[in-house]
Amino acid sequence: NKIIRAINESILIFTLLCRLVLIQRENLFNKIVYYTPSNSIGFSVFLLKKVSKVKTYNILRDIFPDWALDLNLIKKNSLIHKYFQNILKHSIGAADIIGVMSESSFEIIKKKNYIPEEKIKILPNWLNFNSISQIEPNYNYKRLNNLDKKVVFFYACNFGEAQNMEALFELAKNLIHINNI
Image (cartoon, rainbow, N blue to C red):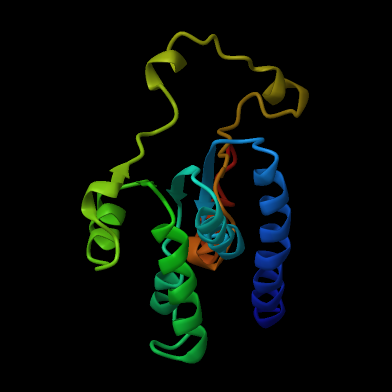
């Protein structure tokens, strides 16, 4: 239930804040790397920065609630939209640096008038593709699972409404008649 999830994430903000303030008093860390969305974590970082001097790096994976608007899950300027916009503003506003995944995300965040452009950086792919060519393939997985002569697809990403999982399932249905997949 989306409403219960939103309430739980909101309650989590205050639980995290209490714990983070206790940890900060003991000087256990001097930097925070966090991702959004997780609305509760981002807002907790915002509150923590109010009571400490830590540097923060926000890895911005999805721009929520913008994608929820695009999918018509919420209405523009509704109470829930305004609530999550406010949390987004505080979440990414707490960051000293915001790492985005693409040029298009960079452009979207740049248009938000509360984020200075110099804080936004494109986070390069975390995988060095040059290192892959040096790795010898291990075919044990395919052999152990009777998949030797098959093409195997892996989906390693978020599973949610923003990722249009229906399209992935439709693709699987369209490929089901091909024997080597």
